[in-house]
Image 1 (cartoon, each protein chain N blue to C red):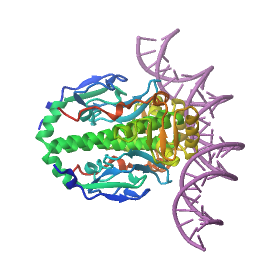
Image 2: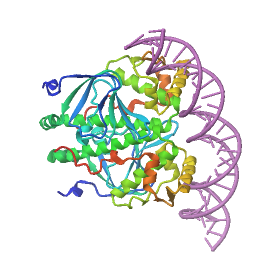
Image 3: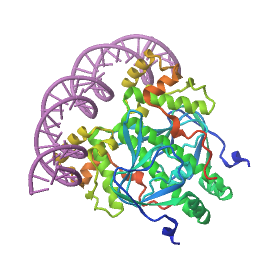
Image 4: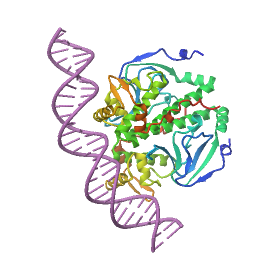
Length: 221
Length: 221
DNA sequence: CGAGCCCTTGACACTGTTCAAGGGCGGTGG
DNA sequence: CCACCGCCCTTGAACAGTGTCAAGGGCTCG
């Protein structure tokens, strides 16, 4: 089955550009081919919270297919390349191959599990633990798609981005990264993250990757 | 179609009892008939974060159907009554009535949208705003199922529960509730919440209920 | 009557924010 | 080619918000 043929030709989007605005009807979903994408929930006072971060190979708005509109915006964090697929095509695909429907459902639930983990992170961890926890997740997810080895990977975010992910100010992120660096746990400069001691980092933040459901077979025997 | 016949007979569970533990294989899903249920993500140090709260009429672990195990525990917050349905029955149901599959998927995505909102709440709101925001959500959700009128409803939680929902200590919840009471925004005693000025409360916390997707038709024309 | 839970209040410590200033770096236009 | 501007990071000092610890009161249940 030539899946690519069902997608529109790849489209390039500049860093910091909005890909899908909150609240409007969506008629297609977006597969991220390269670059990083963030999803933001923000309020009237301009406070922005990153509620999801997507790596290449992930749909950034597959939940928009059943929901029909998004409760948050979707923005490119770096220059990105995306391919979109119309919702009517998704419907046809799923009708033709019901197993695909299960895979799509599963995929949106992974997203939800990550969201719960972020809720936990923001609700119960202090600043250092939050940053450590975030880097643990990133190391593992990048490793899983073949970017880096779980200890060293490209993560082209600003400290303001990290703050928006971890519920901190950019100033405090800077201090926390300094502290983690002197403790030999994270060095992060020029968009390259290095974790000399991933186990130590996981211990510090109480990190466990169970919520990523790696190695789980896809749904329903 | 006699849906009830597909569920096991209702089962009563005492307050504070675990309904589904984290990490184990699940073979059926649980519909909440009465009472309140919480889902918790916790760490080795015993810090607990409420990551979802369920009202009667909601599935508390429908995502366990595709995921096959849960990344969090599910616990009764009050005495509850539940009915379970086996996953094999769900599979048969969905195969027989594909539209049901869409509804189930949609339902788990509502859950995910709420989780994003909680992430935002914890990441970007201060203590008073968090509590206000939480009460706004509860008022609307209880109203939607015919419990209360959007201004007054039963919410039999302790202040420790509220703290676990809002990422605060029980002590600080007590102070915040005191402050909101003197400002005429919330009175909460004996498990009864009263919001004399719901609009004021929504303004204070920047609350918008868009993420609950009320009035949205179910998926796919 | 006593035990235990829940809520409240106070004093104090600590974590993270705010405000401010300065340095490095890259891109752009003169 | 250089000067300038804007963005990003760092650091300091003062401050605000929230947690911690502790004590006491009310209530329910045994």
